[in-house]
Amino acid sequence: DGGITQSPKYLFRKEGQNVTLSCEQNLNHDAMYWYRQDPGQGLRLIYYSQIVNDFQKGDIAEGYSVSREKKESFPLTVTSAQKNPTAFYLCASSIDWASTYEQYFGPGTRLTVT
Amino acid sequence: AQSVTQLDSHVSVSEGTPVLLRCNYSSSYSPSLFWYVQHPNKGLQLLLKYTSAATLVKGINGFEAEFKKSETSFHLTKPSAHMSDAAEYFCVVSEGFQKLVFGTGTRLLVSP
Image 1 (cartoon, rainbow over the protein chains, first blue to last red):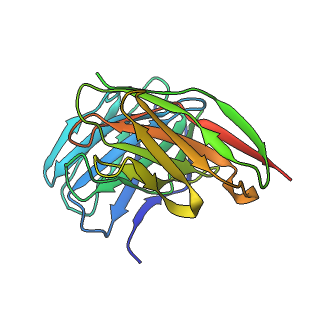
Image 2: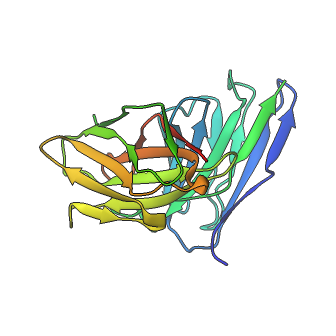
């Protein structure tokens, strides 16, 4: 089955630690995205990648980092510089960068930092 | 900049009655518009999309939406609600080249 997988589903970390969230897709999509979702808010774009070895900051990139070394993988690192890291994180992909193509979402990772 | 306003944070209906979730947008371009659904602790699933073809768009699970340029609206409807429709719904506008702008969501509650 084609799709997007995110692991783990739940993640707990101590304040001050970096943590990496996994996102893998087997849809052969060029573009991938990371969003953050907080209660009562829509999704906010953290980073996006149009193609392998390229990525751009979204609206709330501070305290986050990404890499795109393979087409299938787009891991997100939440660094200790992120002031409010506790949130639900969603990864998505689309065929390419054209605006008419829908994005496909993974099941999400809920990160709790204490 | 483009924006999306979902006019209701919560909508409550009884099973078998019609559903109306309201969405207004602002856009400087010819927009692409989407409705996504999210069940608790899950990812988002595409219900339907408008990309400048027919203004009445049919989606999955009996949902449809009508693009009204004069009213800058893209309301989501369903003739008869089912208990499984209870979820959060997001109206989304494309800000060119796949930069999506999300509304704040409407939680649909369906009572027996």
